[in-house]
Image (tube, rainbow, N blue to C red; front, top):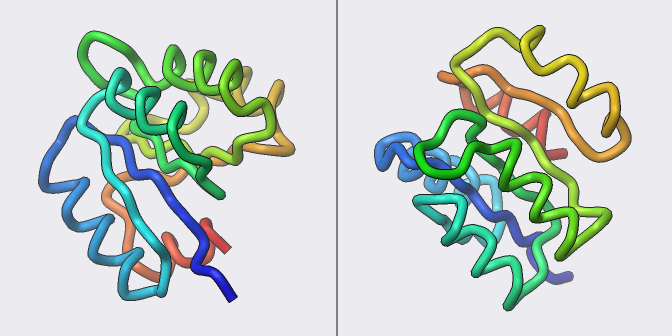
Amino acid sequence: MDKRKILVVDDDEAVRSVTFEMLKRLGFEVTTADSGASALEQASHQSFDLVLLDLAMPNMSGVEVFSSLRQIEPQARVIFMTGYSKDEFSDLLADNEDTTSVVSKPFPMQELKLSVE
C-alpha cells in the first residue's frame, strides 16, 4: 500500500520541522513548504492526500492559499494549523466542513495523529 502524501505549509521553520518529523514517524510521505506560493507550486506538480496549512503567514494567508488550492484540487482535504482561536475561522470551516478542520498550535503527536486519520 502506498504511503499517504501530506504537504505541510508553515512559515515557521521549527513548526515545519517538528510536524514533518511527527508525520514521518506516523508513516506518511511528507513534503514541506515555507510559504503559500511554494505550497501552490508544489500542489500544481503533484497530488497530496492532505494539506496541513498554517493560517497566519506573511504575503499570502492560509485562507488565500486555501482558496487558490481549491482551483488546483477542488476536493483537497485541509487541516488548518493556528495559534489563534478556532472560533475566528468558524465561517470558513462551516462552508467547507466536509474537507477542512483545525488544530491548535502547539499540538501533541496524538492530536496530530487523530486529525490526519
